[in-house]
Length: 173
Image (cartoon, rainbow, N blue to C red):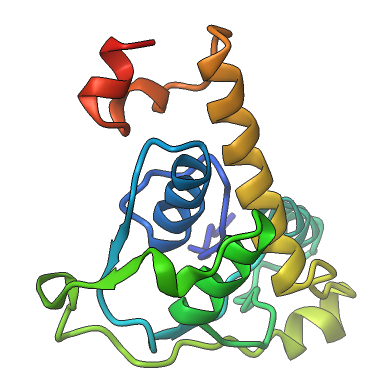
């Protein structure tokens, strides 16, 4: 059996990924932990998809008689700016009031646009993405907002909660 790498978004991924960085920061800004979100290139465009659907695609791949290569993607590219706009709008905030472009966070080797063609997966596996970009952003922001709200109440939360908030907030809990 051959295994192939995929790129998808899971709302429990590490905060080094821009989508998680944005959704986590939006939740923390809404709850008063942070005042700003520092980002690099807002115009980079990526094909972000919803992890449960990508796992479904992996399962479909494993059901095939012969292993083959498939691109699992949404076929749509969206900018970091679009992600931030939707994420802040989800909690009733204007992204322009909180996002600061930090030149030191720009990566000169990054490709401007990454977009996948999933037509073979659709044709041979009957798979296609069903979750819209807007819904993906909503799911991620709501998950982080819920996680941080539970943390504020003293409930146990996933591994990263106490590590990504200002120390004054943690010590004052």
